[in-house]
Image (cartoon, rainbow, N blue to C red; front, side, top):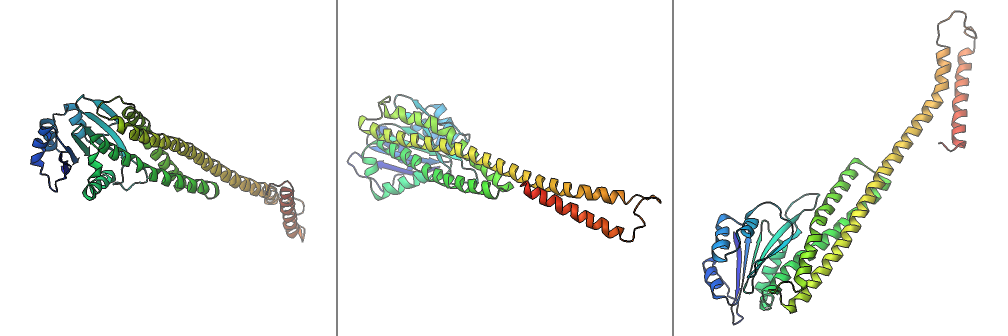
Length: 324
């Protein structure tokens, strides 16, 4: 479904309303700058992309497909087809996921397609409504602004995961629970989701900043280079988070192991204390008529005192050996 259509006329004026029926005529003029945003593309949208814009069937299929595609860039001479990823803020989950934004870039138009609402697109929509300047610099700058905002929206998520890893580390060290392990695994999956897309996305932006594509002007290349620098920083932070998550997991496993060792030590000490007592009780629990001391008047109390002395002696011994 077409969510918005903006057209900057050659005279620099931005019409307030652009009908979807006018898209074909605006594309045919080859003048001005047109931005069409499509959300959750349907078969009707696919027909528009194929018949009006004459995009390659494979690129159109990528827009219609509900499958997740890796970041990539295809150069079709007249236009570029770019897929980049950002954070999916539309799901309520403990695991962060990414969602893709597909861009068709031509000198006179930018077509964006995404399956879920994107903060990046909404922000750009509001900016253009307030001020037409984002479109006046050209299609390559408009595509840059969209990709730049998409990448910038990754940073808050990384900061949240960094704070979460610090809390999990403290929890794993002082009070490890079963839920702690679940949270650690969710964190690792979130980091993996980011890692899968950051590296190929970085290479795509690097290609746009090197002058490999004539549709990207020399003036815009330096701005794409800035996005590349942001992606390098994100990659470094993501690697740090991945190492941190592994460290937190190791801390959790060590804490659980130490706690188990403490429990086993206490149980072993209790068993060691009661073993000789059980021996005495076992001996005097045997039913033999001629067993010594059975007729003692104070035998019962003597045995209890002996058991108490043995138990206390063992506790004192364990404390001196620092086992308790």
